[in-house]
Image (tube, rainbow, N blue to C red; front, side):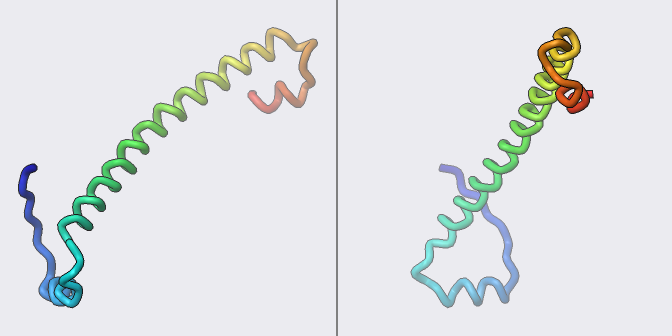
Length: 79
């Protein structure tokens, strides 16, 4: 494992020292991991949004080519 250091204010350090039983390095490691997962999921969400747009365009194309099977409301939804 690699060491990583960061700074905190004196006030924050005093507050942290009130709870010596807490393993603050574990808290920080977990927070960084969770934040990275959120960032990575945000990137995936962009990919998913692109996939949804593509599928909507495909559905719109399908609905326009098969108008007898679907109502005008179905078509308006994807225009």
